[in-house]
Length: 202
Image 1 (cartoon, one colour):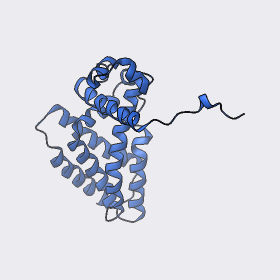
Image 2 (cartoon, one colour):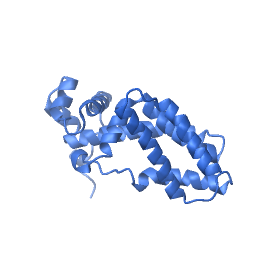
Image 3 (cartoon, helix red, strand yellow):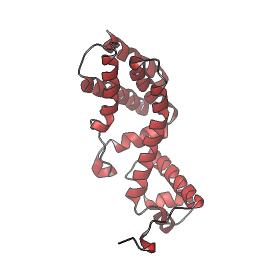
Image 4 (cartoon, helix red, strand yellow):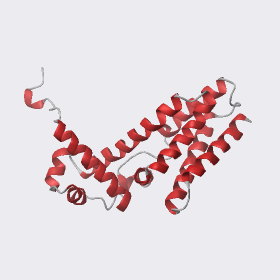
């Protein structure tokens, strides 16, 4: 039986899409400033100068807009890192560019750093199920490492473990930047890439 006309999802207008993007951007800023727990529908609405009902017109709940903000951050991060990895000079360089691009993006987007750091905390607080050790985080990097090994640029080792270690190094320097405003992520990126190169290439 075909769906009834009122059951078919209506495509958002340009104005509605712009409003959604505005709400997502404001939510990212609020999470970065206050954390997930203190980011409420009321605070999002106030930042946008609209009512809570207007926010709920675009998102079904606080969790929905927070999830959208988190996914937006991940999308932007992927859009930054992906092309740099693809443009790398070889398989080993692709792994190293992954680390450099990840840290470089975090250095340029401190609000996004805090959103990701908050999201990878207690899922009971954030409602987001991602975790630092999830396969979604290490799987793509492990595949890059395996490609570098197959090409003979990296010596044989467990790619999953190496991916977890590289992500751990990235997480550590990013966390340090959150604790110390004077800590330079740009310098940290060079150190992490050098560590990866020395460990994997031999």
